[in-house]
Amino acid sequence: MQLQDKLTVSRVKDAIAKSQNYLLSIQYPGGYWWAELESNVTITAEVVLLHKIWGTDRERPLHKVEAYLRSQQREHGGWELFYGDGGDLSTSVEAYMALKLLGVQQTDPAMVKAQKFIVERGGISKTRIFTKLHLALIGCYNWRGLPSLPPWVMLLPSNFVFNIYEMSSWARSSTVPLLIVFDRKPVFLTDPAITLDELYAEGVEQARYELPRKGDWTDLFITLDDTFKLAESLNFVPFREEGIQAAERWILERQEVTGDWGGIIPAMLNSLLALRTLGYDAADPIIERGLRAVDNFAIETADTYSVQPCISPVWDTAWAMRALVASGLAPDHPVVTRAGEWLLSKQILDYGDWAVKNRKGKPGAWAFEFDNRFYPDVDDTAVVVMALNEVKLPNEKLKQAAIARAVNWIASMQCKPGGWAAFDMDNDQDWINQIPYGDLKAMIDPNTADVTARVLEMLGSCNLLIDKGNLERAITYLKAEQETEGCWFGRWGVNYVYGTSGVLSALSSVAPDKTGLSIERGAAWLVAVQNSDGGWGETCRSYDDPTLKGQGPSTASQTAWAILGLISAGQATGKFDKQAIERGISYLLATQKSDGTWYEANFTGTGFPGHFYLKYHLYQQYFPLLALGRYQTLSELW
Image (cartoon, rainbow, N blue to C red; front, side, top):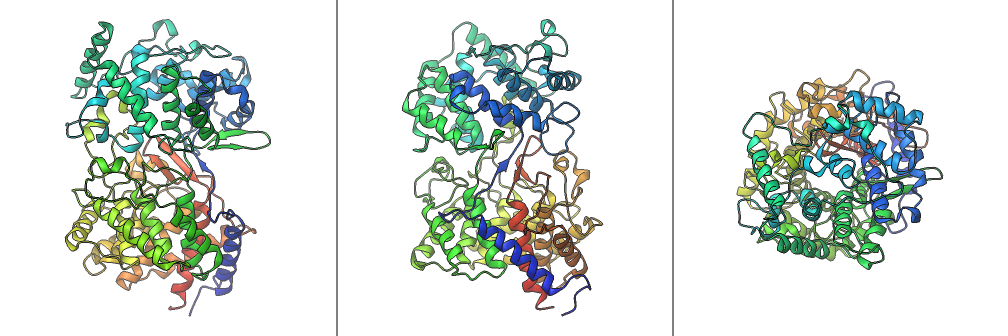
């Protein structure tokens, strides 16, 4: 075996050993892995607002939020949507709001800088709908400038052209509570009471509280919204109370025993806001559980307090297991068997919202979080299946039965175009993204290349079978989704590097002979966008500017994804680009820290493309280990 002078077998083995030791050292006693899921500061700011509205702020260490927000403010005065983005208007307005609610004076130097940043970018009137909503709750914006959400939407049947189940799971769990809030239009008193008049660039007296028109067909929604507002002013909203009652019941039915709603902070905050609007008391057990669930998403240090948008223990555990086994840990090692048994205990055997459109499937999936029985997802389930398949558990019969149940569920979730979505099937009415309320453009959950790829990788790597015709449909879908450059879009990771890596692993696993040309084009694209330092990187801006596909500073996670894709492509075609792979490995070796970890500041996870990004703090650990492990196995054959 020939290796470059600076790339020795011993260095790879040493890097693997150090990385393994680090992962082993942070496993929780229960058997799982779980690390911070970082987003922007709006989540924490909205939690401050929530507790001020409920009057529960003094029961939490919210005084530490001020230090957190100050630490996240950038030199230009604003706060970022993702690392290095130059500052985001809506994010900055919400951070400013939270600081004022915490008692920071408008004359504070940080506030002066923030005000200047915000006003120069158009001020409150140019912010997103959800920022305006949060300001309206405390009288800092007029409800007239927000879209109407008629509560009778709750009563539309599931076979109607539009109903709540045509929205993505995350939009649904966040929107149903807002049907109550938008109908009642509450204005809550806070302590301290604040104004944000200074953030209106045009002057608060000149502010126009109206929805913007685009001059195209989508203006029909503005006209429709005007009709809804007229009906509200005349107190002529049909089935108003029935809709409110249905929404309240829906919220209560979907609260987990742990207090969570939907496994995400927006759904949790909105549900608590809806119940506050309806007059629930803070001492009510439902509210107490809900507020405690929000607390469980918080990260408190000696000086700071912040809140995560979600938590990812199932996802982190499955990937950590795969990385450890791929890098040489025995499949029956106590560490991975303990993790495998924990994952088995988290399989969801209840029917969730997915069953509204999927009338044939039976439960058997996994969710992202500790508890989320209504919203398991395809991506997590496929990764868990692969992780379980790669380990040997004390009760193998139970494991195999769990895998079979999961695969059957996934098969039943295939969408009409041939791919898979995250949480639902055939949730793809794109016009819904054009309604004024949906300015984040994340109202639906259509099938995507990256989730579809995960399913096919699962089928191929685990030697699992689904209907041959359905498999062919999925392969055809992935081939059609390939971009002209040879890459694939990444919906849930940044971005084309993520999508391309996943699809190469998938096609190489299930159809190397039929998709050889597609695989070669994908691999060639990865090689073409490799950075001069040997790594790969891609900025979140590539979602808004396709000319930035595959461009950005190198990161450990994105470099690992590219290596994994190239290795899979080489195994499928017999054409390995050894130089590109080894340069990538050299980058990982050079950037590993002495304690076995890697660090990247950049966000490489995606919530809503163009609008919400994530940094999974373990991505920079288990993906490099997985890549090194796959490389070590491969290099023994070279």
